[in-house]
Length: 298
Image (cartoon, rainbow, N blue to C red):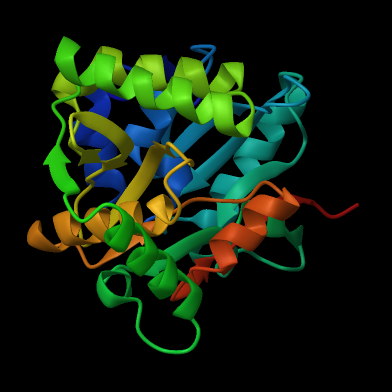
């Protein structure tokens, strides 16, 4: 059971059902999706609480290390925000609520709060029907890359990966190694998040698909499957020596998710990283999920 505010509890796999129940009626913000919460609690400092029937999450800023609060819900949102900011001030947290979903921000009293867009944290949501054939002028480059990959690797195979098995884990490690050799390095946070996901895979709702060319796995993608019709992307890497492999990977992920009755995928935020923003925009997402920073007016 999730603690009632002002008490908090550390995230456990057993919290999934309660978190899903508190978030399922809202747009699929990645910060409040259980699979993402679990995987990215890399320092095991995140914690959960409930206030006025709203889900409250204690995060730690990944750059400063300072704790801050966020919440999702529709109940007494002005009172909830004011109480969370009071708690933050008394306990040495940031005196600003971050990652506040637009659905919450719209209900806040604008005479009490400063409400500012956090563009670097907007979630990108893609209509995965468009990743099957990449139709139209906007997606011409992805369509061409998919053709290049298929022409070069006509024997490629879409495979399902059971990430709680050693065989799948070893194959994924191979892809990660080849990606590192070709692109750079995996951050410690991403490596730890992947390890945490693996530690809880048997208790999480997810799908993992890959592309095999001959005997080799050359790409993989893991998505969380929350209630509703929007999956939440977690991890994906590919051997970039295969030109067009990422267009092919998005294609097979879309096929898999559509077979599971998912129609959209949240590919998360860009954190203000220019190259990452360009890559996400190149997929022409159907919409962005806006988030805000909220503080009391002076």
